[in-house]
Length: 433
Ligand SMILES: *Cc1c(COP(=O)(O)O)cnc(C)c1O
Image (tube, rainbow, N blue to C red):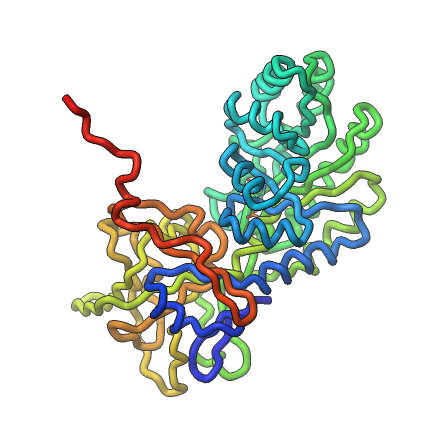
């Protein structure tokens, strides 16, 4: 579900007119729907009601304080991958005890910070990391709760850069070696096993790989439950979302095209595939969804600057660039592009590349896409930009980062100001010599 729809000819987010927001706050502009975030969180948590579970939102997908605070109020936990993300969760009103700390390259300073804050657990990705955690914990007179991230050797994920659960990926410890590592940990001191974890990839649009990975984990989890007293199994994140035809319903179906196959996984389908496998296990189940919670909850509004027609191609040049939304350049990510003014039924169409102003050929949002004809000054929405959108934005080409708006019903609040030119050089200096 999401809360973006045409009303009286203009695209709205919940009750708020997106053209008005673009006029008031300028473009490029990220806009998020609170209702969609809440709906996805509640539906996922609700679909697993038969299990003792905790949804730990993967902060890296969208780490704006207002989004985190919204999830704090829903009772979510958080999956963090850096000290910075833990700081954000705490600033948003979240509790460290609800945070699982993931990532292959935690520094000792990050480990110490997380330990002092009292995180729920460290998800350990290598034996040397476990040794480092043990060392830091002993120096601080603490015992660090940990879970080992298991690499179950299952192929999944929408793109080679977001597949993490194969044995050749840098993530996790091979399933055949895990029991050994738990045994060694018992001798280290300063660490206490509390769980076991896996995460196989991102934008996975079928239930099969999730079920297969859970099935591989079950015998291991059973063994660790008796041998090491573990309390939880985290089954990671990675649930894919629909990037296509997000507005296609009834009236405006006609101009939506399915450029890529639509995913088949629903949230209910995911729960139906994994919950029965986990029900008898007797462990608490943790989940780490990022994209599923926020992906469809955000759009990036951008204004058409110019049109350019060459003998080979037509280009629509917009004011957002790959620095604002890098998914198409990085992962061939697909974003539906829709005009904020609803096109007439008989509107002219064109096949064009939608490109940004950044000096890179990879700076495009769509190539050879059939779209309703747009003119300079028109605002278009890049749909489903709530996950890995702003979170991956940069200042490349010295472009100030866009503002972010959170909508709730009729209300809209600026939850991050647009950067100014002065922001671009903050912290820089010219040496006196
Ligand atoms: C990125 C990541 C997630 C979230 O992935 P989504 O595809 O956004 O659900 C969860 N767990 C770990 C360990 C991750 O690295």
